[in-house]
Amino acid sequence: MKIAVYPGSFDPVTNGHLDVIERAARLFDRVIIAVIKNPEKTPRFSFQERMAMLKDSVIHCDNVEIGNFDGLLVEYLRKKKARSIVRGLRAVSDFDYEFQMALTNRRLAPEIETVFLMTDYRYSYLSSSFVKQIARLGGDISGLVPKAVAKHLKKNLTR
Image 1: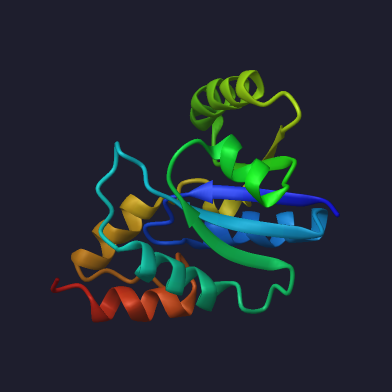
Image 2: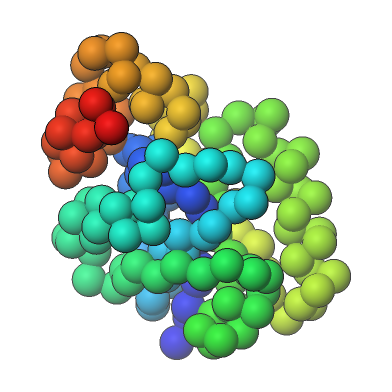
């Protein structure tokens, strides 16, 4: 069974993330969306909220599951018996950081491969940070995030 892990903070999940998830689900037998605790970021939404939004967003993908972890990504993959890391690329500017991470992960776990998927051009500008800012300022986020996420954002703008 080909198992892949798509790690990220998903704060919140966007349609760009969903595009990568759906395409990864066609390439692998099982895809685990791993919500990570990134010490360099202060998420607006808790693990539980981010996982709930992801679950609502990928309910149509039978071979996708949601998990979470902290620590080394390669150790999480080993625990899940996964052999591939899925990373989405929006633009050339993403590549340098992602390339460094892929080489570091290869050094730590040579048996694990990183697979890069370019997001659809319609989402190449999109980030979770932009979505949160637009939502906070009362802008229209339809088309930027799954419907379940849009509802959650609208409900929680005053937090």
